[in-house]
Figure 1 (cartoon, rainbow, N blue to C red):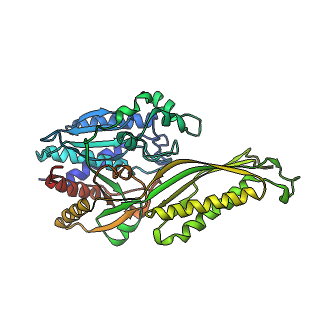
Figure 2: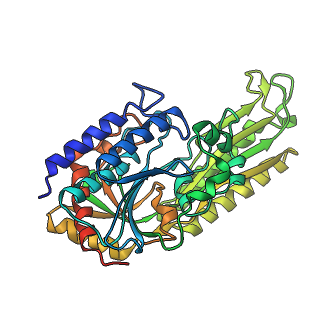
Length: 415
């Protein structure tokens, strides 16, 4: 018989152990892709999966995969997981808690002597955040067959290390990245348990969130080329100040997003660089990142079009120029209505209060949803904190999500 306290204790134990795999101990979790921290975390996850009775492999993208054989192995697999990388100085629950819950679900299947019709696969994806290389969904896109060696050479971190070279240092062969792709018909339904990363569930007193859809995300790196000059000897009307121009565009990004309030659109400038970066020199070059999100693709397009017009205007006025490199473009998606209904019914049978809400954050479920029926369960985040050391969700909340998902998996019809 399923035991909430037992599951909660095991989930807590795993999460506490995984906190050690960070490059910033005492200052949040920093576990960037293809680093020694992801390697030690991967090793821990492999051991945990094996102990849960799963057959464990690490694929060509660095994804850690555990399989529990089903009654008919020719059926598309039932997959549960999330990512095991983090942002810089992030929390200890984002992504990794979903991986731990997928492993806990395997333990419960083993203890309850439940063999599903299809294979059950627990997966820990590499580099969902895109924090190091500015991309995102690396592991899940590799599984979907959307990554190749050429793309691995394209993007680099702040130290100039490409994804290609980082993979080689990690012990992987980027030339074999295509080997991570699953064969046609292997991927069946996909489930992801994740912290909400916001305050909605806590505010309304819900135990679990049923995710209705995930925002689309467009990311780009914008570079403005002006001219470096003396800060004191160059009058304002003769300047080609790249930072001044960038600032006008950055302000416009916020204004455009606020105009799309009905769609819940947001625009974020997370990184800004100035060159040469001296206090008494007008910047000749400025670069910044832009991250635009909405559940409405038209709203994203409207914001991007407005930003292009603003870039044209500010650079044309003083003879400067601009370029933009797209690093990510994913359309908004809806979650499976059938799976949402099954999760809601299961939660209600255990008297868990639920709330239906969209996800404003991106997840591996986003690219996967275009290939398979997909569903997400959110658990409340204390004070809505995420991407910060203060991120926290009590272990019993995760146990409730595992309970519901276990119930749903037992009753799923064969694909």
